Amino acid sequence: MKTLAEVLEGIRGADEEALAEAQKHMDSLIKPLGSLGKLETMAVKMAGITGKVKNNVEKKCSIVMVADNGICAEGVAGSPQDITLVQGMNMTKGICGMGVLSAHAGADIKVVDVGIMSDYNNDKVYNRKVKYGTDNFAKGPAMSREEAVKAIEVGIEMVGLAVSEGYQLIGTGEMGIGNTSSTSAVFMTLTGESAERAVGKGGGLTDEALRHKKQVITEAIRLNQPNPSDPLDVIAKVGGLDIAGMVGCFLGAAYFRVPIVIDGVISALSAYGAVLLNPHVKDFLYSSHKSKEPVYDLIFKELGMEPILEMDMRLGEGTGCALAFHIISAACAVMNNMATFGDIQYDDSYRIDIRK
Ligand SMILES: O=C(O)c1ccc[n+]([C@@H]2O[C@H](COP(=O)([O-])O)[C@@H](O)[C@H]2O)c1
Ligand SMILES: Cc1cc2nc[nH]c2cc1C
Image (tube, rainbow, N blue to C red):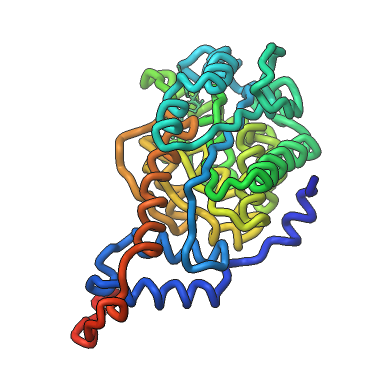
């Protein structure tokens, strides 16, 4: 099993030679230059990850980090806290939103208990419980730095396992009532952003409850004083085990050189955390849908990325990744299967490149 330190040390950026070769092949295909837009950039990006121009992403899975968040005690979430456990179990049966959409996309699911607050009987769950839910970060740190590192290493381990099983494309997912609070708290600390702009209604809140959520998060940051230039300190003090587990997935994907898809707002924040820990991680990231939770846009601006779908979704779980899988696979089909001008023996010198 890889440690966080080994992974941070071992991550390398995109394969520049493969990127250049892939761009050359893409530009030789029978179409106006750049006319397949993001499908082109997605297919070329894949080459930078794998080192190969042509890639197959048919074997794919989503890794779902399930954990409880102690901040729920403050009344910041509209859903009952035990939905975390209930949905975690439902995910192993494939009956929840992400289960149905993943099956539809031909993707497998790995459900990981990185911190559910209760015990259960389900051997389909990867039990990697770091602790029985985070502590309430309105009263003190959510967890210790060591626990945050352990949860990150769970994510790294799960991606390593998926890669050893032959998975070629990884999705991220989470289930953790209260985790839009930790997501906003981490982002506000890292960037200095205000609660007004960075806190939303998550799974559903009244306007009054939203005002309370903003207050609780602002106060919690003041109480814990996380160090904005130390992402691990921030994740430990005002983050969550679900977030830490996903940070580990993104770092692991970069280390093992496999493409990984960002899901909704919690996943986006985790990707941002991983990029802060090692900027090369960005070379391995694919976006999916734009989450309706307001901090999503702020995170994506920091990441310098754009979502590929706008579907008014805000369920999380890994639902957006399941949709993106179809499109990433389509991008690879373009690179793999379209003919070149050379193949059809047609002179392409008339083509004008109107890309910026
Ligand atoms: O992924 C998103 O963009 C997203 C936005 C809002 C809510 N969620 C899901 O809802 C839960 C968190 O919402 P909340 O209100 O309990 O903090 C968590 O289990 C997420 O899967 C997910
Ligand atoms: C049922 C349910 C499923 C969820 N999945 C993510 N957040 C959720 C919140 C609820 C309430």
